[in-house]
Length: 132
Image (tube, helix red, strand yellow):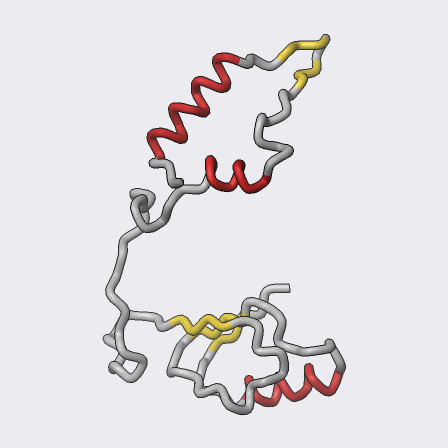
């Protein structure tokens, strides 16, 4: 079951009006969310279905084939994750910025980190980002 943004916002307004926070001296008591004991129901209730709702600042674009020449003034991002030291068979598309979102080693061994670093040095991207 998916909810629209307006349904979620209306429910939150009703909830905040029905259960005002309680003042205790200079502190505010925060009410426990009714879904705090049921994570599945909370996810269903609070999830915004991205297929039907896009925030106003998001502009959807059509994907381009990886070998399309890059127009001037554009930046190509390549994002991967969970390579787990299996970079030998990965064919990297051309990109300006490479983002590896995590789990680039299997066990975290120094030899795996060196292998990943060597693979990254041989890639065709100009900037690499590895969030910690």
